[in-house]
Amino acid sequence: MSRIGYNLKQAFSQMGRNKGMYFTSILAITAMMLILGLFFVAFVNVNLFATSIEKDYNVIQIYLKDGNKQEVNDAVKASLEGMNGVDEVTYVSKDEALLTLKERWGDNGYLLDNLPDNPLPDSYTVYVEDKDAANSLAEAALTIEGVDDVVYYRDTIEKLAQISHFIEVGSIIAMAFLVIVSIIIVANTIKLTVFNREKEIGIMKYLGATDWFVRAPFVWCGIIVGAISALIATGLVHLIYTKIIELVGTDIARIISVTMVPADYLTKNLLVIFLCLGISIGVVGSIISIRRFLDK
Image (cartoon, rainbow, N blue to C red; front, side):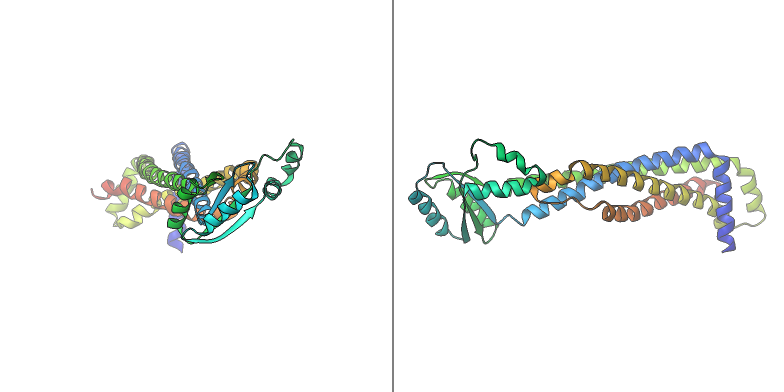
């Protein structure tokens, strides 16, 4: 414990004598983590939306033409029930659809009361066994007389999957680039500190100090810089994400019936990731910066 205390004291002393350089390092790493944090927030929520919508992949909405006679609608239902993979067909009147829409709009549902007439069509909600059945039924239903349109979530899920993949790849590329830049920044910052103590390090080595005894304070400098950056970046991401939830979270939940990932849950996980990343950057950068001085 006394060794750790000594190393921490030396680390803070070095940071105090070079405030400007270490402050710049903290800003750079914080900016890097902030960018990664925003990528992470987008990736997690897009995945959540895709997963939630995918649960409704077996639900297809068949919209009927206005003015259909009852026998036409009955024929549509019979045709749907006769298709392979269909579990259930449920009729939804335009009045029921409007009531559901009002409930989804929540406090703004009263806006629909001023409509001159109900613009929503009658429809059938069709539940199918699997995705293959959903694809086949969606194509076949459009050919049935009396059907106006077919809506289900295949295209939406495929687009969300593409967006999720793009964000994932972008995050990996950005992380690799920014981590390298951050390690270089930390290494150069600590290297300048080492230059200032080059004679002192030489004397310590001459007196028999081990490499790790000399290296430890600089490693602790890197750890402290990485940890501080992680805390600041996590706090900023939390503030930004909380504000986004306040502004659009309710609207998103109303539109697609999916809530965004809770800020507290996401922040806890992000803090662990950032601390591990920041400390790793600090340690690697500090080891690189002092290695050539210990090899003399």
